[in-house]
Image (cartoon, rainbow, N blue to C red):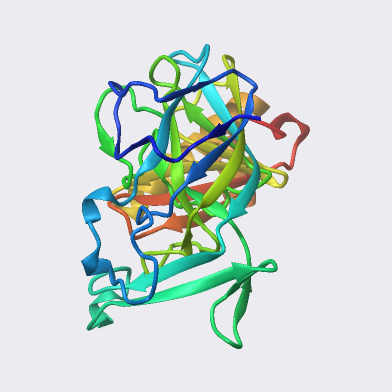
Length: 296
Protein backbone atom coordinates (compact mmCIF):
# COMPACT_ATOMS: atom_id res chain seq x y z
CA UNK A 1 0.00 0.00 0.00
CA UNK A 2 1.26 3.43 -0.92
CA UNK A 3 2.50 5.79 1.81
CA UNK A 4 2.45 9.51 1.00
CA UNK A 5 5.27 11.21 2.96
CA UNK A 6 4.88 14.44 4.90
CA UNK A 7 7.61 16.37 3.06
CA UNK A 8 5.40 18.11 0.47
CA UNK A 9 2.89 20.48 2.03
CA UNK A 10 0.74 23.50 1.32
CA UNK A 11 -0.08 26.44 3.57
CA UNK A 12 -3.00 27.64 1.46
CA UNK A 13 -5.73 25.85 -0.42
CA UNK A 14 -5.65 27.37 -3.88
CA UNK A 15 -7.29 26.33 -7.17
CA UNK A 16 -3.95 27.05 -8.87
CA UNK A 17 -1.94 24.64 -6.68
CA UNK A 18 -0.17 21.91 -8.63
CA UNK A 19 -0.59 18.36 -7.39
CA UNK A 20 2.28 16.88 -5.40
CA UNK A 21 0.72 13.43 -5.36
CA UNK A 22 -1.94 11.50 -7.28
CA UNK A 23 -4.15 8.56 -6.30
CA UNK A 24 -6.73 6.47 -8.12
CA UNK A 25 -10.45 6.67 -7.52
CA UNK A 26 -11.11 3.96 -4.92
CA UNK A 27 -7.48 3.72 -3.81
CA UNK A 28 -6.52 3.08 -0.18
CA UNK A 29 -3.35 4.84 0.97
CA UNK A 30 -1.52 6.20 4.02
CA UNK A 31 -0.58 9.85 4.57
CA UNK A 32 2.11 10.86 7.06
CA UNK A 33 1.67 14.23 8.80
CA UNK A 34 3.47 16.45 11.29
CA UNK A 35 1.62 18.13 14.12
CA UNK A 36 0.17 21.61 13.55
CA UNK A 37 3.45 23.18 14.71
CA UNK A 38 5.41 21.35 11.99
CA UNK A 39 7.37 19.48 14.67
CA UNK A 40 8.89 22.62 16.16
CA UNK A 41 7.89 21.88 19.78
CA UNK A 42 9.95 18.92 20.94
CA UNK A 43 9.98 19.56 24.70
CA UNK A 44 8.34 21.77 27.32
CA UNK A 45 11.04 24.42 27.10
CA UNK A 46 9.74 25.53 23.67
CA UNK A 47 6.84 27.97 24.04
CA UNK A 48 4.40 29.06 21.35
CA UNK A 49 6.00 32.53 20.93
CA UNK A 50 9.35 30.79 20.27
CA UNK A 51 8.26 29.00 17.11
CA UNK A 52 7.96 30.14 13.50
CA UNK A 53 4.23 30.79 13.12
CA UNK A 54 4.59 31.04 9.33
CA UNK A 55 5.10 27.27 9.01
CA UNK A 56 2.22 26.30 11.30
CA UNK A 57 -1.03 24.74 10.10
CA UNK A 58 0.25 23.18 6.90
CA UNK A 59 -1.40 20.26 5.11
CA UNK A 60 0.16 17.40 3.16
CA UNK A 61 -0.81 17.60 -0.49
CA UNK A 62 -2.30 18.50 -2.82
CA UNK A 63 -3.30 14.91 -3.55
CA UNK A 64 -5.16 14.74 -6.84
CA UNK A 65 -7.73 12.00 -7.32
CA UNK A 66 -7.75 10.75 -10.90
CA UNK A 67 -11.06 11.43 -12.60
CA UNK A 68 -12.38 13.98 -10.12
CA UNK A 69 -13.83 16.99 -11.88
CA UNK A 70 -15.68 20.16 -10.90
CA UNK A 71 -19.22 19.42 -9.77
CA UNK A 72 -18.36 15.96 -8.44
CA UNK A 73 -18.43 14.99 -4.78
CA UNK A 74 -15.29 13.47 -3.26
CA UNK A 75 -15.74 11.03 -0.38
CA UNK A 76 -12.75 10.51 1.91
CA UNK A 77 -13.16 7.53 4.22
CA UNK A 78 -10.95 7.40 7.32
CA UNK A 79 -9.88 3.78 7.79
CA UNK A 80 -7.14 4.07 10.44
CA UNK A 81 -5.09 6.60 12.41
CA UNK A 82 -1.67 5.89 13.94
CA UNK A 83 -0.31 8.36 16.49
CA UNK A 84 3.22 9.40 17.47
CA UNK A 85 4.35 8.53 21.04
CA UNK A 86 3.81 12.05 22.36
CA UNK A 87 1.60 15.06 21.78
CA UNK A 88 1.71 18.67 22.88
CA UNK A 89 -0.66 21.28 24.28
CA UNK A 90 0.28 24.92 24.68
CA UNK A 91 -1.29 27.87 26.40
CA UNK A 92 -0.42 31.37 25.31
CA UNK A 93 -1.64 34.90 25.90
CA UNK A 94 -4.85 35.46 23.92
CA UNK A 95 -5.17 31.86 22.75
CA UNK A 96 -8.61 30.29 23.04
CA UNK A 97 -11.79 31.55 24.66
CA UNK A 98 -10.08 32.32 28.00
CA UNK A 99 -6.76 33.48 26.58
CA UNK A 100 -7.16 36.84 28.30
CA UNK A 101 -6.56 35.02 31.60
CA UNK A 102 -3.17 33.66 30.49
CA UNK A 103 -0.26 35.82 31.63
CA UNK A 104 2.64 33.81 30.22
CA UNK A 105 2.99 30.96 27.71
CA UNK A 106 3.32 27.37 28.83
CA UNK A 107 3.91 24.04 27.07
CA UNK A 108 2.86 20.58 28.19
CA UNK A 109 4.25 17.42 26.57
CA UNK A 110 1.78 14.54 26.82
CA UNK A 111 2.96 10.93 26.39
CA UNK A 112 0.67 8.75 24.28
CA UNK A 113 0.71 4.98 24.72
CA UNK A 114 -1.42 1.98 25.72
CA UNK A 115 -4.57 3.62 24.37
CA UNK A 116 -4.32 6.72 26.56
CA UNK A 117 -2.97 10.24 26.57
CA UNK A 118 -1.12 10.49 29.90
CA UNK A 119 -2.00 14.07 30.89
CA UNK A 120 -0.48 13.75 34.37
CA UNK A 121 0.46 11.07 36.87
CA UNK A 122 -3.16 10.60 37.92
CA UNK A 123 -5.07 11.77 34.81
CA UNK A 124 -5.11 9.66 31.67
CA UNK A 125 -7.49 10.30 28.80
CA UNK A 126 -8.79 7.60 26.43
CA UNK A 127 -7.49 8.37 22.94
CA UNK A 128 -10.02 9.82 20.49
CA UNK A 129 -7.80 10.48 17.46
CA UNK A 130 -9.16 12.81 14.80
CA UNK A 131 -8.03 14.88 11.81
CA UNK A 132 -8.28 18.67 12.16
CA UNK A 133 -7.48 19.71 8.59
CA UNK A 134 -9.03 17.95 5.61
CA UNK A 135 -10.17 19.76 2.52
CA UNK A 136 -10.08 20.24 -1.23
CA UNK A 137 -9.11 23.16 -3.43
CA UNK A 138 -11.75 25.92 -3.48
CA UNK A 139 -13.29 26.90 -6.81
CA UNK A 140 -11.80 30.38 -7.00
CA UNK A 141 -9.99 32.08 -4.14
CA UNK A 142 -6.92 31.19 -2.08
CA UNK A 143 -7.62 30.32 1.57
CA UNK A 144 -5.09 29.58 4.33
CA UNK A 145 -5.14 26.02 5.65
CA UNK A 146 -6.00 27.34 9.13
CA UNK A 147 -9.29 28.84 7.90
CA UNK A 148 -12.29 26.53 7.41
CA UNK A 149 -14.85 27.31 4.73
CA UNK A 150 -17.00 25.55 2.13
CA UNK A 151 -14.03 23.53 0.83
CA UNK A 152 -13.27 22.12 4.30
CA UNK A 153 -9.73 22.75 5.67
CA UNK A 154 -9.33 23.44 9.42
CA UNK A 155 -12.81 22.28 10.44
CA UNK A 156 -11.45 20.84 13.72
CA UNK A 157 -14.38 18.46 13.84
CA UNK A 158 -13.84 15.50 16.13
CA UNK A 159 -16.03 13.32 13.90
CA UNK A 160 -13.33 13.28 11.21
CA UNK A 161 -12.17 10.06 12.75
CA UNK A 162 -11.86 6.34 12.03
CA UNK A 163 -15.08 4.99 10.52
CA UNK A 164 -16.30 8.31 9.15
CA UNK A 165 -16.85 9.24 5.52
CA UNK A 166 -16.24 12.91 4.75
CA UNK A 167 -17.77 14.38 1.58
CA UNK A 168 -16.42 17.47 -0.19
CA UNK A 169 -17.61 19.47 -3.21
CA UNK A 170 -15.02 19.20 -5.97
CA UNK A 171 -14.10 22.63 -7.33
CA UNK A 172 -11.11 21.84 -9.59
CA UNK A 173 -9.85 18.99 -11.74
CA UNK A 174 -8.39 16.32 -9.44
CA UNK A 175 -9.97 17.87 -6.32
CA UNK A 176 -6.67 18.91 -4.68
CA UNK A 177 -7.14 17.01 -1.41
CA UNK A 178 -4.85 17.95 1.50
CA UNK A 179 -4.77 16.78 5.14
CA UNK A 180 -3.04 17.50 8.43
CA UNK A 181 -3.40 18.75 12.02
CA UNK A 182 -4.12 15.48 13.84
CA UNK A 183 -5.17 15.36 17.48
CA UNK A 184 -4.94 12.56 20.02
CA UNK A 185 -7.90 14.08 21.88
CA UNK A 186 -10.03 17.18 21.32
CA UNK A 187 -13.38 18.29 22.68
CA UNK A 188 -16.02 20.16 20.72
CA UNK A 189 -15.10 23.83 20.48
CA UNK A 190 -11.33 23.32 20.90
CA UNK A 191 -11.82 25.85 23.68
CA UNK A 192 -8.23 26.53 24.74
CA UNK A 193 -7.19 26.89 21.10
CA UNK A 194 -5.61 23.44 20.77
CA UNK A 195 -6.33 19.78 21.15
CA UNK A 196 -3.56 17.34 21.99
CA UNK A 197 -1.58 18.18 18.85
CA UNK A 198 0.29 15.20 17.48
CA UNK A 199 2.10 13.78 14.47
CA UNK A 200 1.27 10.44 12.93
CA UNK A 201 -0.32 8.94 9.87
CA UNK A 202 -3.79 8.25 8.53
CA UNK A 203 -5.16 5.59 6.20
CA UNK A 204 -7.68 6.98 3.71
CA UNK A 205 -9.84 5.78 0.84
CA UNK A 206 -11.09 8.18 -1.82
CA UNK A 207 -14.27 7.70 -3.87
CA UNK A 208 -15.75 9.99 -6.52
CA UNK A 209 -19.53 10.46 -6.77
CA UNK A 210 -21.20 12.22 -9.67
CA UNK A 211 -24.80 11.99 -8.43
CA UNK A 212 -24.50 13.51 -4.93
CA UNK A 213 -23.93 17.26 -5.40
CA UNK A 214 -23.15 19.29 -2.28
CA UNK A 215 -21.95 22.82 -1.55
CA UNK A 216 -20.16 22.19 1.75
CA UNK A 217 -18.63 19.29 3.70
CA UNK A 218 -20.88 16.53 4.99
CA UNK A 219 -19.78 13.80 7.40
CA UNK A 220 -21.44 10.39 7.47
CA UNK A 221 -21.15 8.10 10.50
CA UNK A 222 -23.10 5.03 11.58
CA UNK A 223 -25.57 7.18 13.52
CA UNK A 224 -26.29 9.93 11.02
CA UNK A 225 -25.26 12.64 8.61
CA UNK A 226 -23.64 15.88 9.75
CA UNK A 227 -23.96 19.03 7.65
CA UNK A 228 -21.09 21.45 8.29
CA UNK A 229 -20.78 25.19 7.78
CA UNK A 230 -18.00 27.65 8.63
CA UNK A 231 -18.64 31.39 8.79
CA UNK A 232 -17.45 34.35 10.93
CA UNK A 233 -20.39 34.07 13.36
CA UNK A 234 -22.07 31.18 15.11
CA UNK A 235 -25.50 32.35 13.99
CA UNK A 236 -24.55 32.48 10.30
CA UNK A 237 -22.90 29.06 10.44
CA UNK A 238 -25.94 27.46 12.08
CA UNK A 239 -28.31 29.06 9.58
CA UNK A 240 -26.34 27.73 6.58
CA UNK A 241 -25.92 24.23 8.03
CA UNK A 242 -29.60 24.09 8.98
CA UNK A 243 -30.68 25.12 5.49
CA UNK A 244 -28.42 22.46 3.93
CA UNK A 245 -30.05 19.86 6.19
CA UNK A 246 -33.56 20.99 5.28
CA UNK A 247 -32.72 20.88 1.56
CA UNK A 248 -31.38 17.33 2.03
CA UNK A 249 -34.60 16.22 3.77
CA UNK A 250 -36.74 17.84 1.09
CA UNK A 251 -34.87 16.06 -1.69
CA UNK A 252 -34.50 12.63 -0.08
CA UNK A 253 -37.96 12.37 1.49
CA UNK A 254 -39.82 14.44 -1.14
CA UNK A 255 -41.09 16.91 1.43
CA UNK A 256 -42.16 20.52 1.16
CA UNK A 257 -40.18 23.13 3.08
CA UNK A 258 -42.54 23.40 6.10
CA UNK A 259 -42.46 19.64 6.76
CA UNK A 260 -38.70 19.39 6.29
CA UNK A 261 -38.26 22.39 8.58
CA UNK A 262 -40.44 20.71 11.21
CA UNK A 263 -38.37 17.50 10.98
CA UNK A 264 -35.20 19.58 11.39
CA UNK A 265 -36.50 20.84 14.71
CA UNK A 266 -37.97 17.52 15.86
CA UNK A 267 -35.01 15.24 15.08
CA UNK A 268 -31.80 17.16 14.40
CA UNK A 269 -29.19 18.66 16.74
CA UNK A 270 -27.03 21.75 16.30
CA UNK A 271 -23.49 21.04 17.50
CA UNK A 272 -20.33 23.12 17.76
CA UNK A 273 -17.11 21.92 16.12
CA UNK A 274 -14.75 24.81 16.87
CA UNK A 275 -15.03 28.45 17.97
CA UNK A 276 -11.38 29.54 17.91
CA UNK A 277 -10.55 29.94 14.21
CA UNK A 278 -11.26 32.87 11.89
CA UNK A 279 -14.53 31.13 10.98
CA UNK A 280 -16.72 29.28 13.47
CA UNK A 281 -17.55 25.73 12.39
CA UNK A 282 -20.81 24.02 13.34
CA UNK A 283 -22.55 20.83 12.34
CA UNK A 284 -26.20 19.81 12.20
CA UNK A 285 -26.69 16.14 13.09
CA UNK A 286 -29.43 14.47 11.07
CA UNK A 287 -30.04 10.96 12.46
CA UNK A 288 -30.86 8.07 10.13
CA UNK A 289 -34.48 7.90 11.24
CA UNK A 290 -35.83 6.89 7.80
CA UNK A 291 -34.69 4.40 5.17
CA UNK A 292 -34.52 7.24 2.66
CA UNK A 293 -31.72 9.06 4.50
CA UNK A 294 -29.21 6.31 5.23
CA UNK A 295 -26.50 7.98 3.15
CA UNK A 296 -25.80 11.16 1.25
